[in-house]
Structure formats: C-alpha cells, structure tokens
Image (cartoon, rainbow, N blue to C red; front, side):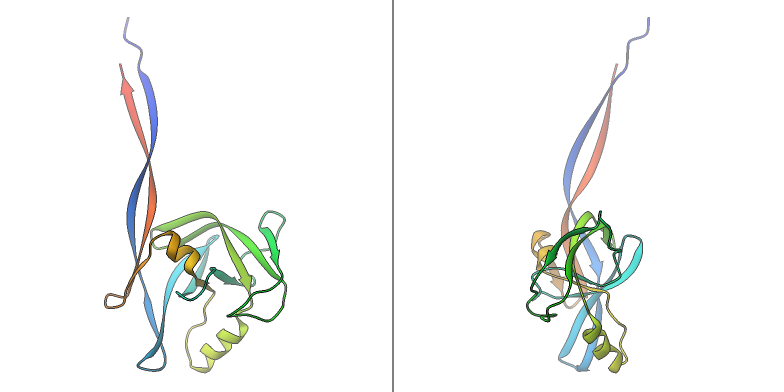
Length: 166
C-alpha cells in the first residue's frame, strides 16, 4: 500500500524593497519641481503627486465610485491643500498600486483637486489624480532618491510554501 502524501501549506511574510520610478515635474523654474508617480486605483490609471508634507494620501473626486462598500467616513474639516469646507469622504480602494507595490483595501481622502489641476494646465503640465502622503511614505519606510528619480518602499511579500511529506 503506497504511503499517504501529506501536504502542508505555510504562510510566510518576507520583506521586500520595491523601487518605483518617479517623474520630475518642473514648474516655473529650476528649483521649483515636484515628483509624480504613475499607478492605478481599482484598475484606473492614475498620476499621483509625491508630497512629503501631506499627512494623508488623497485622490480627486470621481476616481473611486461612492457606494456603501467604499465610503468609510465623512471628514468635516481638511486643513492644508484643500482647506475649504466640502463633502470630503474617506474612501476605500479595493486595489492600489505603483509599479510592483500593491495594497488592498486602502483608505484615501477624497478631495477636489480642481485648483491644482487648473494651475498645472496653465503651466501646460499634465494633471494629477491624487497625492501620496506620509501615511504611505512613513508606514513603508520610503526612500526618495532625487538623483535616480526613484521612490523605494518596504512591503511584505506573501509567500505560500508547499511542503509534501510521504
């Protein structure tokens, strides 16, 4: 009689560094620039501004469809980039990625970026869809390499190890 095979699955988390290319967005002079990154939210391509002064990552209205499953909460007051009182919501993105960096069920603050994009259009620059803030940059130990124009983030890589025993 052949021996029974026993299969064991072990879940392991391994830290990996993900290097993401940045685009330098020169505004109105050599010393006035921002970095942007291309990514995706719920299968929609997005262009995001990397902002080390932003406490929370934000997306422009309309990127995530408001439904009972996506609205997490309402924010009464937002200070800074969009300090006007409006209907600001925390919305959950099913998937969010930048290069090989992927996060599931991430919460973004939905804000109006009309004034920012109006300014970028005036400078004949491409509009942005959101902002990557310190919530992501800090929690993933971000390293911005200004010379190489890259953003490196630490993330956990899930591994499934199959062990077959006879």
